[in-house]
Amino acid sequence: MSTVESGSGDKSGKTIFWIASSILFVIALIMLIYGIYQQTVLHIYKAPLILGIVAGLLLAIPLELWNFSDPDTLFRVMSFQDRFLMVCFGFAIGLGAILLYGLNLFVPHPNFGIKDLFVFGIVIGGLIFGAGVGIAGYFPGTVWIALGQGRRDAIYAVIGGLLGAFTWSVIFGNVRWLFWNTLNFGPVTWATLLGFNTKLEMFLVSIVFGILLLLMFFFLPRYPKQSMKQSCAFHLIGTNKETTKFSDLLKEEEKKYPKARKYITELINESSIRNARSIILLGIEFTIAAVAVIILRQIFGESTTYSWIGAQLSYLINPKWAASNAYFQLFGGLHIVNGSPVNNPFSEIGWEPFSDLGTFLGGLISSLFISKRFMGFKQQIPNVWQHTFGTSASKRALGSFIGTFMVLFGARMANGCASGHILSGNIQMAVSSFLFMIMVLIGSWITLRYVLHLKINAQGYVQ
Image (tube, rainbow, N blue to C red; front, side):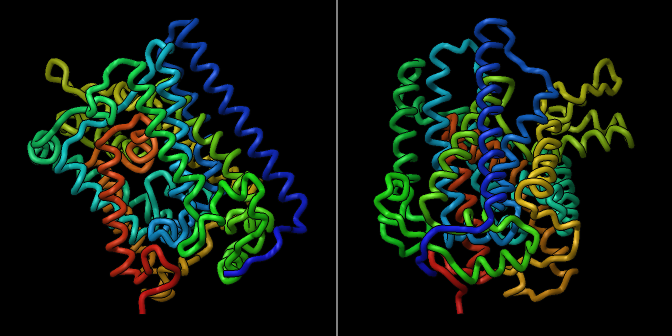
């Protein structure tokens, strides 16, 4: 780690980054304003499906800019060697909860999607999901971004994810009683758990909840063993003008992405004033987008699409079997009506396949034109993976496949993923989503520590 003066000669990269961030912010704000107008003036409570593509773009481009589609990045942030994801999501969840429940005071029908608190499914599913992330280095949504970014191992991740989701769909009817029906306490929020049920009471609880998470964002240092002076709060107010960088990490990034914009590479891999300010702008855009989709149509999710694709492909092969599948009836748009199979593809899932398409396009657009990280599907083995398993392309392909199989199997068991549970669920203050998040962290910590040999909340590898 080194402490240096902030600066970069990449003026064009700086200009493009801030223009792109500003455009995303304006579009997200327009989406939110339109959602409010749609509900309060037009009395329309479901936006057109096609807007899902825009929603996916608004959430994918910031994640690509932050490079969360790189397995190395996710390995580091999930092991807390870098708390960037933690503080970014803490900011989005804290501010998002206050904004959502504030809007709930006057918007007629926000499209809440609070997940049921079924203990077995969420605990076991979360652990499997976290272990899969620790192997693959992917969330369901970052797989689509990585595919757009041109990562070769994302191809194997997509296949593994589709099979993981399909496997859960096949066994669901026989295990639902245990994982979903046993110890199912329904859609519980922190407000209702405390006995607060009115809109005003829920808003007041969201303020307390949001402030706690925002305090974590402002005062938790990005890297382990840093003092509080290195946190966002001190950078934002200008008290700390130092820039903390990891020179070895920057060299790795420059080697992996030789054509990437230097300004963006430096910006996302440092603790500094400009980094803190960039998080504020993109973080607010990310938050507004996550709340806007709830006002417009539905919560943001990524993993259900994997099951939906399995349902639609199954329907092409064997319509009656597919339409008789209990899980496909819930999420795949398939039903048996008067003894005949019927397919209404978007009746249950809504715009999620469109938002996943937007997520893919966001990764493609951002990597081609903004970050310049597009990889053209050239072979690249994540550095953290190499440390344990070497440079074998076949081993990495297998790890990407198996890990993402586990991620999607666990996500479907828990009825949500990083976007549906950890982001959208916690913005809604869902207790189930908080429990899922904790289980994911535990599962990933165990895997990263004992499989990839990363230290937890400390730099480096276990000897």
